[in-house]
Image 1 (tube, rainbow, N blue to C red):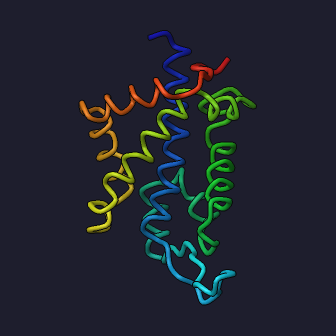
Image 2 (tube, rainbow, N blue to C red):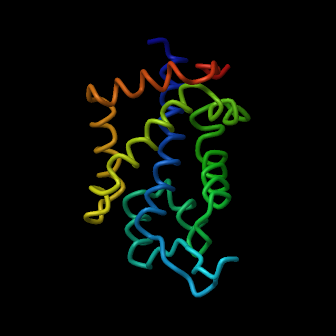
Length: 171
């Protein structure tokens, strides 16, 4: 594989790690707050205990800024999107991809396919993931194993066939 393609694939993987980590945080560290939404239901917030933050700092130093960004905030689409985009802008743009090209990366067919595949995996395995606390590294390994399986590859192919045409590489 040419070097440019390898760099692009690594950048997709790096950006996907941000999506996965934010999802993992929401999955295991969500709590009901005393604040109520418009319907009177408790608002959901991401609350990472101090011990959890220490573990994240120790095991996933590249992800600390995202954990700090969402900690104590309402668990919402806007919060998630902001946290992931900020993290990609700080940790991927100019590092894994040329400065200013992370937007093209996240709009690429490769990233959209990987992100969709991950979301399908989380939904399909939600009950198993919920049975016990799994470290982020375990999530990554489980997802990589599944996505490399015949079932995962078949699903990826279906996603790619249904996806609108996007750029497959970043210029």
